[in-house]
Image (cartoon, rainbow, N blue to C red; front, side, top):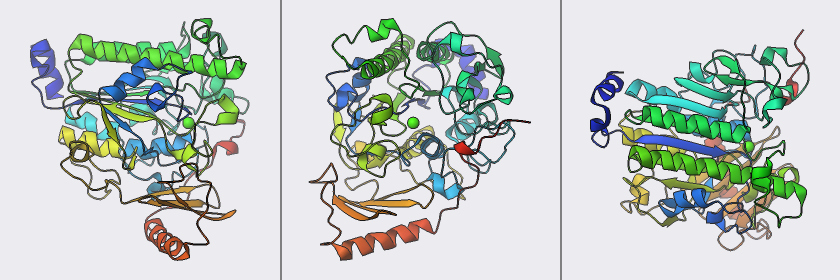
Length: 450
Ligand code: CA
């Protein structure tokens, strides 16, 4: 608080002098691994996302902690495996349910940065609880421009429900009007452009303060909707759905370009950590995304579900043009920015992520994560990665892959490497002892209000 006022008084003079870095955490929704230029896409140019990678670090083994939206977000917003607090499925969209979200004992990135003097804003998709105690304004965000549900219609004329309490059919929440600081408002433009506008406006307004901007685009999550402006950039894509998808990704990329330009204009590019990732892999059959060589997609335990486009630009801390190949996970963002901001996390709730800076600066040579874990679904599929070996235990059987030579997970080594599999299973069991069962009703449990 004090710092915010001081910044106001001193204006621009304080820019570059203060120690706290800014953080802009940009999330794409259901974006395919191979659908960004920095991962090799030639069909969909993403020059601005590519800039983040080229001027910073690109992760070739960048993971999220779950293969669908809600739990993945609960993980990276707390820096802890969401299994530790029972956020193991997509929560029901129900504003009367105080359980269906991130428990209040857990602290979100916004909730630790705000008391440290950060201005905070969430833009776009929330999907971390709709009850008044769980919404952005109750979770450390000064400002919010977006929607609480897991997906949304993109055209203003389709947004005609005044509030979640008025939703009368499953998925009706896609049609709720946009929330701006607690008020339902009308918007004029394509939703992706509106989200970019809100982000740019916040950066301009808060450039003299340390700030945290969570910019969670719902693009390119279904419904598949884009404007002629963006669609017309892809005359050569003949598949209509893929063309729409490309337009949606292109709109997102334009927005990221405007965010980067706003940072430059304010003279704060250097000290601003800009993170970009997708919350899970592309559901190829739903939104025509492309995960390239990776097997499977959204919802799957295979690489296509959990390995995502992931890059960070942060000139003050990370050299340009870095390609980092050891496994990292979205949980690391929390640990990295809080360490840089000098914020000590609650020792009772240890982070699973690590501060990536010493690894990216070459000060530490080992792997940030000797082990990574995933637990997904009802009779949970259990997944563990150690070095290049990945074990998947599911109702369909056991699978063991060597990712160093089998990225597409085609050659199951389980028969020839029984001892290795048993060792990994035991490591999983030890980790799993620190997790909790699902604590709330899932998305499908929604019932029409009486
Ligand atoms: Ca998603």
